[in-house]
Amino acid sequence: MYELKHPKQIRILEPFIFFVVAILVIVYAISALNTGDWLWFMGGTVDATPDRIVIWDHGQKIVLQPGHEDFNELATAVHESLHDFSNTDIISLGFGEDTLTYYESDGVMLELFYNNPVPYRASFRVGKPTQMLVPIEGRHAGNDYFFRGDQGTWWFGAMRMADPEPLYTALSDLGYWQPN
Image (tube, rainbow, N blue to C red; front, side, top):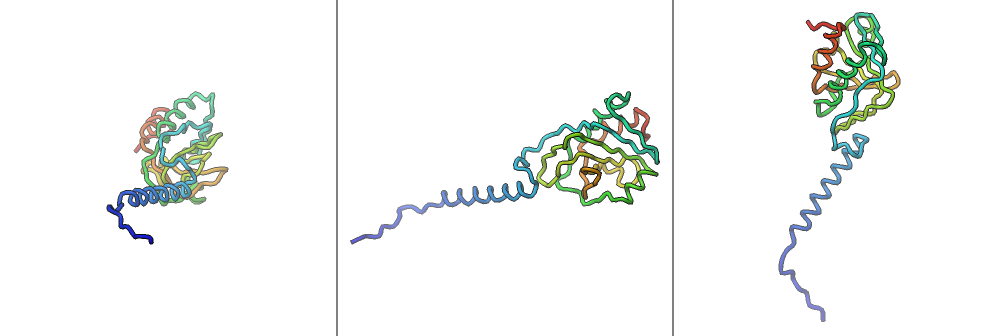
């Protein structure tokens, strides 16, 4: 006849470890699906050097491309200010047609264009922007925001530059904008 034996020791550690690992895998998978990036946790800086820069200054459109005397200095400053960001989620703020029309006649903003998407890594969905917009003076300016987009469409939600000073300083030094 078969005799029942009771375990001499109750195992708590193995189920607890399994539970913790299962929770971590679930959190990772949800974050990866939410961001669209399986390596979202790596973070880090990106190459944010634009291929073309458009400055809108109170209705005047100034296009800077490689070869323009100010392009390299301003492109380097853009990279220094946009290669990293300081927010932990998308800032709930849109950049619609009204605001774009405003900047085409008033205010100062930068439009940055990229030949290849800028691969920001974050714990929230950033997308793969090929254009960015930085309000300098006017609506949404003064908060270090930048907006992302692709193929002429601006996406909802702003991000915040980790260090906007290189960009503001270069714009001022090159005579494109004077802070108030």
